[in-house]
Image (cartoon, rainbow, N blue to C red; front, side, top):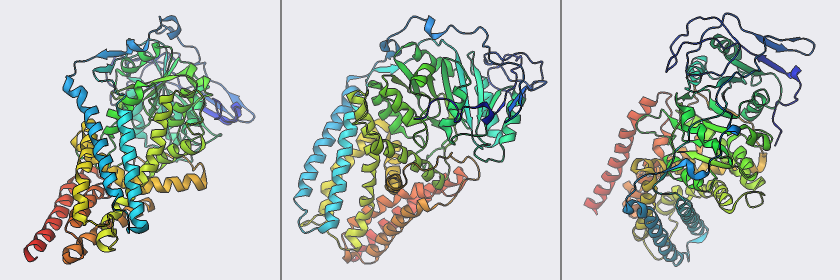
Length: 604
């Protein structure tokens, strides 16, 4: 990991646009246009509206000349420092809530039932492997891997504390808000900055403009926007590319005890500090993670909301001080970051490996189960695939090249949680075998279970499959369970490709998620399109010639097609159009399958 601060360290490699914060009139939410006012030295920002300063102070360093504007380093009187407050214990950050005994026992009981049913099913399946060949063996291996994932997830989610929820103590300490920008549209960045300034707690808002080093055309517009809003803007001209280096550059030039990181497209809530800052009063807490909230519409076709992660996995990690940052909306203790040398630049993005390094140094994390901002999620399958590929490569790089099994300083449960994250990507790759199941058995004539028909196989597998879906639905809700399973199937080829890329290429180039001009197509979607085509072919071939295979192959292929067709249909850049297409797509698949099945039964 690289140390905190900019690469190269020399001020000659830095271009900073530093503007003065102006006197502001009180306002709860940022207005559409700030009024003009006189300027004064930079002070901690409160929930006041920004103003257009009469003159921006510009600091621009070149190889031979340094021009400095008024000093902005002094922090005026504000909240009491964290070090002057009486420390709290972790128990002070929890609050009891009434929970019925049935609700408390339902989750663990359901998990045990699913584990037992799955074990019985796999024993039955093992007896029918003879004569199935390599394909049958691979399919069974995928089932075993999936069962292993179910068991591990059941164990991890059992760490959730029923009847206890996180509640932050009163906020104290100085706060800096870092808004990272790398080519996002100015209008989106402006909305984010206005909301950041309006946070109802004394703080400073900094613009971390990496557009120039990333060769984005609008980097000057971001500088001008910061000047117009009276904000300090750091614009790098040299150093390592990537969000982590951008954050480290700002970290070396600021001094608050706590740092909140916000992406350029996330609108912060005014009471952000009240929700999370008080957790740092527990001396062992190094950072605070929050739930991510996006404007995803009614169907959330791409599962951007990830209810399983934020309702089950992160709360389970929180029990063991192992919750990991999801990037945006993470609050860091400065001394914790400094102990790890700053934000980690080892991985593609900074969040997972920075969390990992902080945990290995003895710092605990907190997961606050509420969002502190609302952002823009990938709207097209192509952009979603790019994003998830980056995340998978991060998790797999950590697993393969900085294994939790060998990492010093982690507790046993922290190792288990990080292994669960990394191995989860590998296990998810096995889902591709399930997508191949109907074509292999119905079209290619390959037996999955020797000595039994496909219908008998499905009847034996059905209780286990339904139980697994109910277990996910218990944590994520019925709709969330459908989206979780659909996204797992859709992402399986992406994770397999990510594994290959990590093994062959090491650390690929970092990137940001597009907010406008979203790509509609990508080569990353080719495997999913081929799987969908194979499932469609299975439905058509078996439907026209039902003697080829059991009719259960139609149902199986139709269910899988309905799962991946949702994410794959997100081609339009207009989310409303994609959502309107979901019901017709599902009805078409269901009508086709039922029509073929009814025809076969009537004519048979």
